[in-house]
Length: 197
Image 1 (cartoon, rainbow, N blue to C red):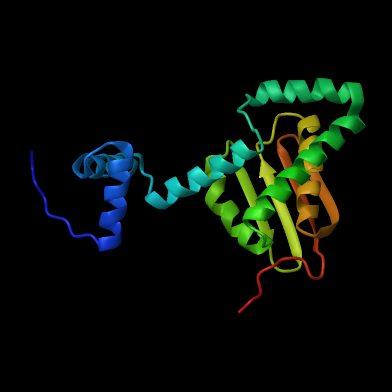
Image 2: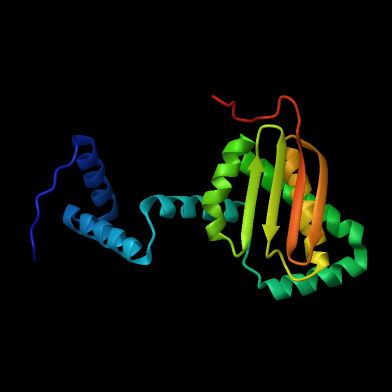
């Protein structure tokens, strides 16, 4: 087995020792596992930063009890539900959008910062496009690949409208078609938004 000398700060060495003790491992095995994980991520084309973002993304998904559902099944189920009670389904999706908005706003309170975060997290979704533009006044949220039908697009638009309202976006309008939703509006005075420097 090859031996390497590495240099660590005293604080890092203590943290590694504490983690090794806590897990019942040697420092050598902990470092070997860490390097192996790093090399595996690199082979997959992922960086440490992307892994941290994925973990944060999964934390949000878990906190809203999201479960993976094949889009064809979701689409069919939504359309059946819409034939039963369209208004009630829109209300449920709106409330879900509002809850997700409150949760995400507690993590990222500024909509301009959120638009930058969307760029980083879009790759973790099955959507072909997920884009949030916020220029300080106007806000536009676009999703493509949101389902196959107009029914899916309509309920998604309902959720996005309520999501954006949490961030203080008003005068909302939407454009929808099969597999496409765009909701846009104006940012209310005094809403959380990053100031231009």
